[in-house]
Length: 119
Image (tube, rainbow, N blue to C red; front, top):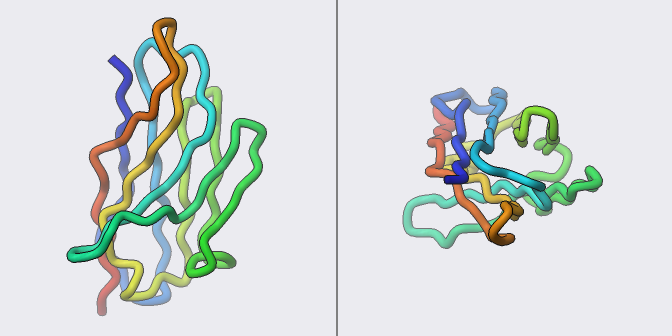
């Protein structure tokens, strides 16, 4: 059973920083794109940042220059370093990855971690 588990969320003041982690486990043959999404109350889920298997990162405009996505394939983990956080960054952050097992290639989601930016 493939699982993605996020960690690192919490309460932080505006202009503060947090580092999210998402670790994959299970019968994994390969991990392709790894992505961070977020969903605030009353809003649709939106992609925040993506990173390819080759390490190419892409960002939405509202986080570019403040957030950095990275991955460690040996640890099967994707990270999201979030700096200069704003109250509007408050949301549940979820990781998603396209993962190959012996049986198939499919998208998997973590359960999410809450990030709250407030003074």
